[in-house]
Length: 195
Image (cartoon, rainbow, N blue to C red; front, side, top):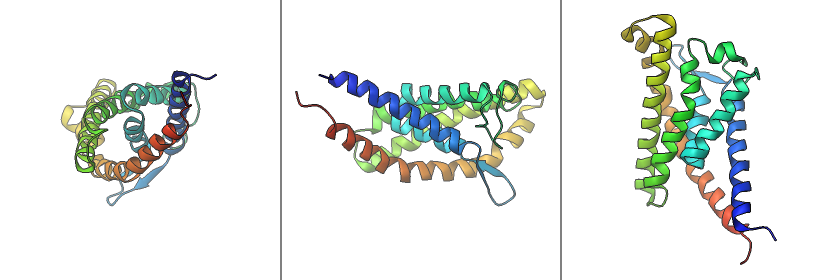
């Protein structure tokens, strides 16, 4: 007989792999916004992973994604990959996906998971905002170290133009994440073995 714990572990691993796969599929894609700033769908997948999986598993899904990119799978922006890109001038943002998913999931699952919908959405927004701040700090510090650009120039190049796109992606995570989370929860309960 399969134990409840074994089913839960298997389910979590499958969900983790699915979120890593979603990031692999979406990260190479970008949508141009007004002003010509391309918005990568990577951070949408990263935040969604945190919301759906929680902190530890969300971070694990993004660690898997970063490792796949580092070994050369074409899962980065523009269908590229390789250690050189992961360690390149924007590599801090790629590596920052791991703590971004962790913090997003940690805050949301700890404070918002069982709350009523408005509070749930509030903690989802707070988690995604905190995750993005950590992502921007790590990515910008890395960018400054590699390029030797000033903080102001780095923020102007790597952060400020992307804030509107991140707000749109956060809204999309709320719209998509809540029903998907409910479906995952219903499926989990439906498949639990009788005790």
